[in-house]
Length: 304
Image (cartoon, rainbow, N blue to C red; front, side):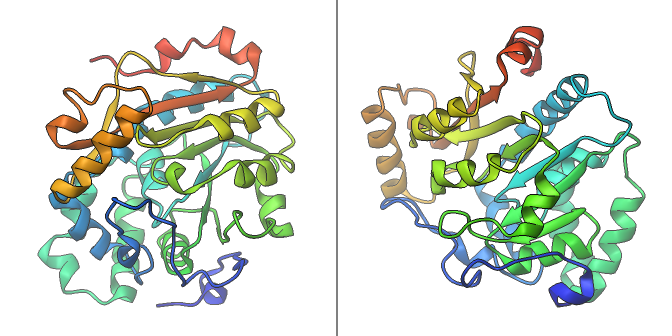
């Protein structure tokens, strides 16, 4: 695949981005092997049978959040989104293009995609996404440990800028801080389990405008330390209570047992959720107090 230099990617690898992507909790299945491939085909082949769907849930909510938070800053420029743990730019694809997550599963597991080289897939993808580009696009910055995933997303035209950095282990590069300084919305659909307040402290210290943070968090995970960090930057975190969002099926009975035990230990009820075979996530939305009052969380949630 093309290198970071010849795809135009601005990336600073904090440590070795090709080493283990995450510290997976004991009891959860690791999918590290699908996150640093030259392109996203293995990602969709592996997660499709497990009905991985959080980016689908995020698509509608992120678009609503972008419309709302964009009203609080008077600028003709597109709103900047920072997608943490962005992998191959899936959220960027869903935010800025008339596609669904199901469309992407079909696209990347199709016979035509299977026959292409990575270079050919990038060329095909650039045409695919260009034909489906929305008029109200956001400027999307991607942050992920995986250099290959960032490089692909940049080459395919999904990310405006991408950075292969791990802020859990090192401060952000000057280039990342420059790119993210006008971030208005921070999104997370797949990484809250593997992050601490350290990442957010390092990022928000360089953001000039109070950003919104929209995170889909597994119910097996506590978000308390991150919410406390965001509070220290003047952001109020609300937890959606009307419903949860399925993430994916469990890979086996052991993983389900782990999830039920973790959810129960956290004071939540697994009935109808983890007990029925799926990890579930909860939306946490953090914003300045005035934005919380102006844009009620219930107005940003999808109707069921």
